[in-house]
Amino acid sequence: MRAKNISRYTYKRTSFQGWRLSITRSGYQFTKYFSDKQHSNCRAAFQAAIAVRNRIFGELKAPGADPEEVFARYRAELC
Image (cartoon, rainbow, N blue to C red; front, side, top):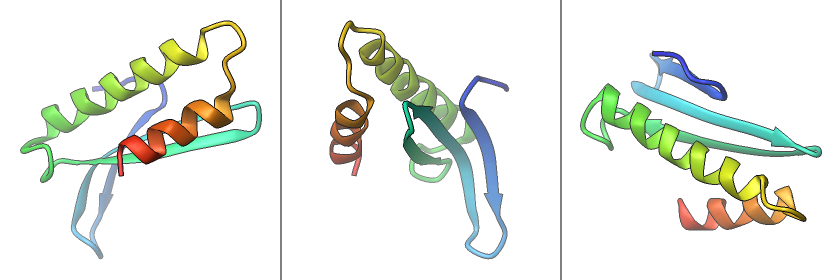
């Protein structure tokens, strides 16, 4: 599985397995991890990452969209 802005992460020290969504726009960065365990399996975690990525990209395409505000809103929403 491959998708723009989404990478597979496996950390042996912490036993984390999942996907990382990372988007940078106008010098602002948004990063969110999607755990296989939290989403029940690898595919579900990947689909969750894609869904959030698509929502963020949709908002960033709007005229006058401020990446700082969009990323801050998603950080608060996805805590």
